[in-house]
Length: 238
Image (cartoon, rainbow, N blue to C red; front, side, top):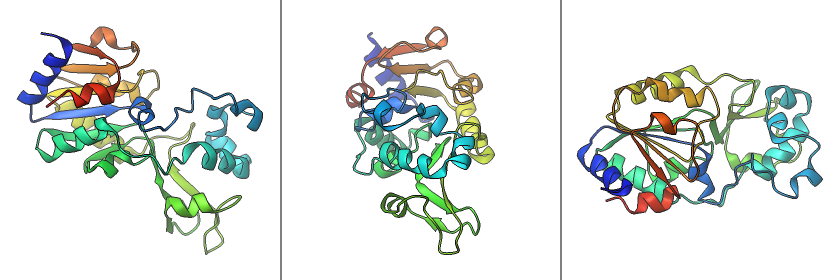
């Protein structure tokens, strides 16, 4: 039995699947992984992405943060790909219990997934830091400089920046889902970023599946490793 057939069998037999995904799920929808810096990047910015996307930089250089954020982090034309759609279908069929994602693009929900734990927040949600009024992503995209609330406060995206902690309710829910899962499918992540990568340690089952284009830091503990495009692999599953 090859890897795809083994994965298909486990999926078909389970009604308690949890999916844990990273940037590789979104890159197949045309959303660039900001770690793979493009050639134009160094001409446009004086700092590496990890610096710009830090809490300290946001506080000290808010306008420059937003210049990068609008240019690189808002991919509003992106559409869900085969992986997003398959996961939403599994949830509808009663097979998938939750999606845990490191992505902030909202594509899982756009595909129809309802139980989504967004570890790093979402670009679709933005709040005034003074009065907590909600603003959608179009308001941010169409604003200039630092987006301001009608009350005069500045607006901050509901995304977890470097140096910021994860939302505890989201983290607790994700840990519970992973710990109770029968099959845990991990896709599109090298499992190099903590604390997210550490969530695998809460899995108690014996069907840990890693799907990625390249080897990951945790291949050695997986029960099944499938290398390749996650969209192509998922499109082969029933």
